Amino acid sequence: MTDQKHWKGRIDSTTNMSSFRLHQKVNRIPINDVRVSDGQQAGIVGFICDEGVRRNQGRVGAANGPNALRETMASLPWTFQEGQQVVDVGNILCLNHALEEAQHELGGIVEILRTKKAKCIVLGGGHETLYGHYLGVRASLPTDAKIGIINIDAHFDLRSYEVETSSGTMFRQILEQDSNVDYFVLGIQRYGNTIELFEKARELQVEYVLEDDLTAENKTEIESQLQQFMDSHDYILLTLCMDVLNAAFAPGVSAPSPFGLDPSIVRSIIQKVTSHSNTHSFDICEVNPLLDENGRTVKLGAYFVYEALNNLLRGNG
Image (tube, rainbow, N blue to C red; front, side, top):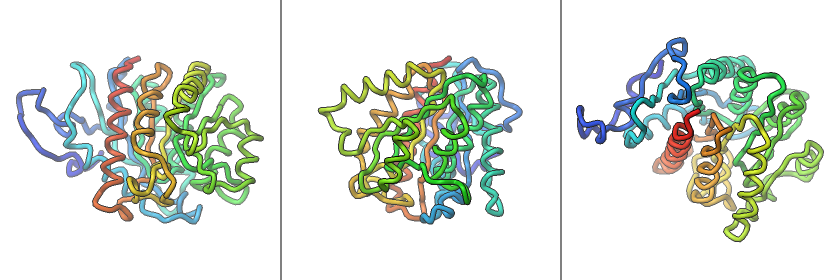
């Protein structure tokens, strides 16, 4: 289970629930103690890993992200309805560079949470977190269920995995291994992806929106595109790579982006996607406290997680 020290914070009351904060209500329990919930419960799991980032020649430190996010979320107000629960089932650790084993272990936890009808929040970790998240979702569904993966990211992450997998290969792995998955990514940087990656995206029929096209003028069209994508899939999995944000707001990532998105745009996408009835899980990746300035990236990430958590539970089923 997660150490209690990561769920500590201000206490305004011990009896008045309207004054409670998240750390007063989150239950730290083993995964096998999670009960079937019919959508009234959300499970949090951390992925202590940045082996994929290391393999991708990035700046490591995202393994410290999950517990840092918990510590920042702890004092946020408890905003859920009576009967709703948030449980923390602990962390998956990547040991001895064994990335693939850790991803499958994460998948097993996600599968259990989803089989028990709990909403799922995965705290990464490098963006290799997403592959484990996907494995669990796929295992919890019929083999012919159509999964739509929505990624908020500056990068396609469609690199070759012929030599080894990394934080830059997950989506290509999934699309080449599972014909019932489609991929939609928002925030792609023109200068953050090679011509080859744009060509691979077209070859794999990836839907994408460039960072500089995510404007107020295009909002209606993009929201319509997102809605159509979500409506046409049985399950929506949302993943956020924090390097999609402008480095002024999120300096604590492996690959800071000077042309990244404003937090309000990312928040708007999270709100729309996690409010859809087919969305049941969310992960956040590339929060690197070792590279952060004044905790800005961690705090912003914690607020994004809480936004997703509130919307997922509001949707129930």
